[in-house]
Length: 315
Image 1 (cartoon, rainbow, N blue to C red):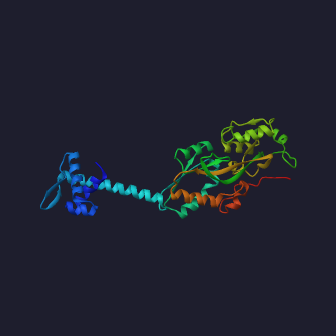
Image 2 (cartoon, rainbow, N blue to C red; image 1 turned 90 degrees about the horizontal axis):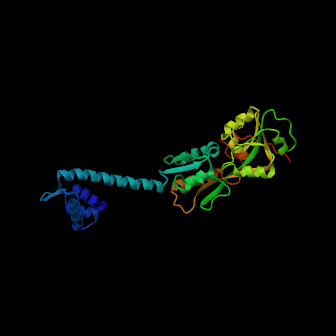
């Protein structure tokens, strides 16, 4: 059974005449007759009674014609869905992201995108780290994702934000030197992100510049660490964006040797992305791209609450 037979059945049923059906389908009458005869042989039932009144569906043919119409309707729906994804009147954008980006960067972009393209669905896929996000892109589970610099060679990227790792000191922190030193930090129990994909680079930075620091990286949740720091139980080093919102009593300082993570928007190269994905990509670039820092974020997005306190920097 094939689509040409399905179309022939429906056309003959509608026109009650093989010649008229052939004309509507822009085929020869013999082609339509052959399609019907072949289908009847495959199904083992007669679909039409041929006579002076034309081609009249048999009882079996009448039921099969109904199913054939449904097949053609489903085919039309498939074509319509494909058209929607080729245009901007529908479709979906799937975004793989980690928590800090999903919390502080994407809501404003998604809100603006939804106003411009209300018929396009935006779906967030939260992942624990950038390696899982890149895998989502490669496996076709997401259209756009967020990763760190340097990026894999199979990804097209642009810089979204440079997010500084900052020292978070408890409210009772004693007066500090003009510039924070590693010795100052060594007086506290120091909480860090775990030495997993997202934390490897920071741990290497600290191993290079401050190998004497006593580090606790067993706490996985940023919010847990921030609460402990706010209660005076420890100090911490976290990305500015991940730490927000930072309680007002916590002291925020740049590290003695500053360190940043550069967050990139990414999508697969050499992939035929639908227009909806291109539209979101362009809006994201316009809103968030080009060498901005987490501390500058509120000025870049005026409608976003000022969630990121200024980090104290000294000459």
